[in-house]
Length: 364
Image (cartoon, rainbow, N blue to C red):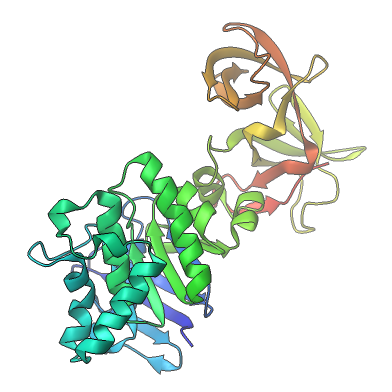
């Protein structure tokens, strides 16, 4: 079983310096496809390298299965690491690269050959086994790197941005292949990326990190629909979530949210501890803003982005507040036109303006 536990794990690269990973508590169940997601410098690669044994934590405990692996060298952790730059030996064929870790373990040659052929069939790369890395495309070299990990038959695969060097079309193809591969193997995959599309496509569990701190860990749908804080809400989704400064006030009809020209009834979905008369941030995604002649919110269209099946409007409401709105690609408004917007009350979010923490799932 390749359950992975990190308990209170911290890491700094200089004594007294900033923490690359700060008190991380993370549980990845066996057989899950977990993605560590966040911007550059958030600590996701450092976390992966600590799981692999390439870095040692300054504090905390790392378990793989039932074994505490602090201080255990990488070759004894039953994990396989796939690097961003493939790290293939140029003087070895694809088959020799794939078999190298088995030869280092003194596995019999007959078994090595059998494993290479089996993995070659799984990855559809039998014709490539006799070629050298210089004769392979980027996607083919990536398959060799994956094959080298697979022949070891590890309990867990650790992948550090393995698709970042590929072009857009090949990245899409490899995402599909990686998802299918994980389902076939049933192994634990931990995948690092800064690309939210990769995360949403591949993962059944996403851990969002920022400045070394875990922000939220959940299924992709939950991360998208119920972000834990402002950072997650703004990082997940393309285009990013709209944020509008507002204020909660008490009235005869209940708690009201006033945000510029917009006034909404906050209903009963705010926690009981949340009192009126306070500043808040209203979050709404582009697809939950709709054009409506009777809408309460006027917006002047400043830019129209055509993406084939989707069209997005960028415009200004009130004094300096900008919004992104999804529009009908077959009937968009004109540049400079003033349109009116209505909000889907079932998909609105409230956040604390100082802490950024989520206050409510929706308004009504």
